[in-house]
Image 1 (cartoon, one colour):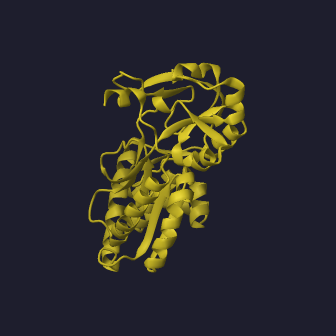
Image 2: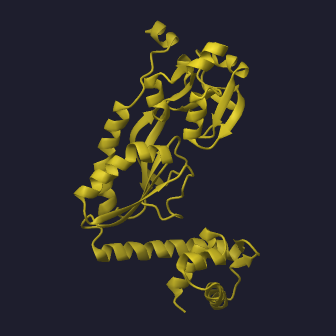
Image 3: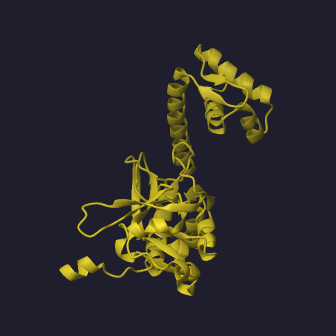
Length: 315
């Protein structure tokens, strides 16, 4: 039995959720996958997986063993990279993840330029609004928008985005404009669950020590920023999104911002990578290449907010 191969297979089984999915992914028979896992369990003299008809789960011993497997496989991967010269020269495969809209608008052009400059680096770009786990999903770099929850990661800040409430001219002409966040319950809203609760939005009020939450009336709740934009342009309701997601519609007049004076603080944009061990040259090259370009792009495309009345009055 190849121990490393068995460890890698166990990781694949857990990530894919069942044995059949791993067989399809690796193009090997289901019986082979099952036998190799069984051989590993026999070698360890313990049960690692609880097999169900559609999904497998880990036993307590399996949870602990899986963590060790990932650490060992990561060390082997680092050793292979070092042997191949990835720590000395920028080459090899680079896996990057970002949200769909951000990747298409901001990251894609930078990656195209980067690939022209570094012909020995290949990039796999994963665009998804699901937050991926860098270690578990074997990702080198991620663009994170919002609060960073994992202190073990290294972050390079490249800018920030406003969170703005906006609606179509037709909707505002029909219902009027909200003067303050407490007016929102009388407006239909489009909720996008990017870090927000479906039934409430947070705002900054004069004199308040922290953001305050205001209930909204969601007529539509979506997981896609583009779907929220399209519905807002169609006049379905007010929506709140990151400024870059609606910038062209604000510029064209399809959407107008409201409640600017009550915006919460902008959300940070960071390039994130694993902070353990030596950084491969390909990762360092991309950070050095992409960070200044992203800072410039985010600053150039930002919708600038007017000073809040209570701040201007105090100066």
